[in-house]
Structures are given as structure tokens and as C-alpha cells.
Amino acid sequence: MIPAAPLPMQPRRWQQAWREAVRDPRELLAMLGLEQAALQVSPAAAAQFPLRVPRGFVARMRRGDPHDPLLRQVLPLDEEMRPVAGFDFDAVGDGAARAGRGVIRKYRGRALLIATGSCAVHCRYCFRRHFPYAEETAAAAGWSEALATIRADASIDEVILSGGDPLSLATPKLAELTAALAGIAHVRRLRLHTRLPVVLPERIDAGLTTWLAALPWPVAVVLHANHANEFDAAVDAAMARLRDAGAALLNQAVLLRGVNDSVEALAALGERGFAAGVLPYYLHQLDRVAGAAHFDVPDARALALHAALRERQPGYLVPKLVREVAGDASKRPL
Ligand SMILES: *Cc1c(COP(=O)(O)O)cnc(C)c1O
Ligand code: SF4
Image (tube, rainbow, N blue to C red; front, side, top):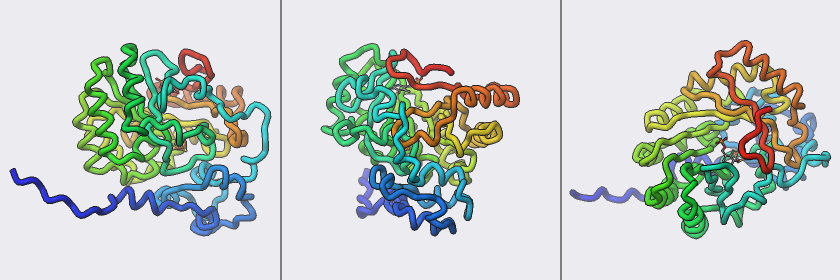
């Protein structure tokens, strides 16, 4: 066979879209026809955790609506800089559960790899906004430390790629990891936790689906969408490509005040996800991370919303309402 001529080095479409993400809060507000002053955008919050949002995601925001549920997830606001008791820097005990560089071992049978620190979008509520990514990624040193950790523990049968967002790594980098994992007999499942198919559906390109389809294990992709408006035709098409590649699609959402804290919003999220081939998995109570207190929904209200959702939705469209508690053996049902 004649090997195909190498293509000239061109950025892939998704990498281009990644680089063109909006990073200036003023530009974002101008695109939406909103005044900065009315929203109390915080330069200090933006300095701590910069704004980053792909243009395709901005296109799904409502023009002229300062309460848009997608905008609220990404806009750095003054409220973030207000210290609130009980909202700390390592909210979920990841520091203590570290099992080796880039590996977090909290639950039986599962090892979570911090594949990379990068994300295509910066979510203001993210519990990892203070995590020391740079020293912690499993991709450092060609995955060797993370692989050694997994190889040494035969109780690990599922490897979870997380981050950051694992799909922010280029496909060959992911392939390098899975090729090495394929040599570890006790690994039987692979899972990806990613927001990229939602915020940058271009990422689900032919190279990625070819890689996915060839993996030797059953694969689950856990998406992170918090609101029905995050889905559009491009996202639907990305989900279809993931399903065609054999992945089971689940969604986890975070319950966020001002974003999805109504039974209508939660029902719509489940229905819209299902239309795209995605089943709800978890609805997380917010991790109590510094800077995110204004998103918090009190437990009593969370339980009431969940009960109302259970009454009106089919069981398969009701996610499990959980909270992450440091030291627990699983996510804790509320
Ligand atoms: C959430 C999480 C998992 C996965 O838990 P599931 O209940 O299986 O979804 C695994 N490891 C860590 C460190 C986690 O935070
Ligand atoms: S890790 Fe997930 S929730 Fe956090 S900023 Fe990245 S995409 Fe958003």
C-alpha cells in the first residue's frame, strides 16, 4: 500500500474554534447586547479564573438577557469574591485522595485520571478552579506515573478520564494512553467525563470517533450539561457521532441557583438530553468551593425539586440527586 501523503500541518477545526473562544467579559457582553455595569462583572474574579467560552456556546445564549442560564455559568461576577463560611479551596477532598501524579482514587474499582488541566469553557461553579492542575496532570511524563499507579492496583477495573476536560487533549495523546491501558488486563471499562461535546461539538471529529470505536472496552461518556438550552443541532450531531462510535451517553448536571433550579428547567434538561440520546445520571449538589456560594441551592429546596421532578417525569429521566462528601465510599444521595 502507498501510505497517504501527510497533510500539511493545519490546525484542526476544533482547535481553531478553541483558540477563538471569547476571553474578554466586555466582548461577551457586547455580543449579547448587555451593559457591563448592570451585571457587576468582576475583574478580580476574572483574574482568579479567567473567562473562557467558545463562540458556538455564546450563540446559544439569549440576546439582551442578563439572567440567561448559559451566561450565568461563565460570567465572572463580583459575588465570587465575597468570602462565605463553609466554601473552601479543596471542597471535595481531592488533595487527600490523590494516589499518584494525576490520579484520584476515591471509590472502589475506579481510578480517576486528571488527564489535563485545560477546559474549553470555564465554569464559574467549578470545584477545580483552585486545584493545582499544572503539577497534577496525568499526561505529564507520557502518562507513566498514572499508568504505574493503575497497573499496581488490580482492584481498578474502570479508568475515568477527567480533568480539566480530557477531550481537550489531541486525539493522538488520548490514543497513547489507551494503547498503554490496553496492556493492563484488570482494566475493563473506560469512562470520559467531558463538557466538550456540548460546548465545542466540533471536537467530535472523525479522528476522535475512529479512536473511540476501536477501543477494546465498553465506553461511557458522561457529559456535563446543566440546561436544555445548551443543546442545539450541532450538539445533537456530535452526540449521534459518539453513539455511532459505540459510547453510552449519560449526563451529569450541577444544581445551580439562577441556572436550573426549577422543576421546569430540570425536566426540560432531561427531555432535551434524551432527544439527543443522553440519559440523566447525576444531579449534583454544588461542591462548596470558594467563589461559588451564590450558586448554592439549599438541600431542602434541592430535595423538593427532585421530588417534584420524580412526580412528573418517567423514572429514566430523573437523575440521582447526590452530593460529594470527602471520605465517603460513594457519592452521597441526598
Ligand atoms: C465522582 C467520582 C468517581 C465516579 O463516581 P461514580 O459514582 O462511579 O460516577 C470516581 N472517582 C472520583 C474521584 C470521583 O470524584
Ligand atoms: S472541569 Fe468541567 S466544570 Fe470545571 S471548568 Fe472545566 S468544563 Fe467546567
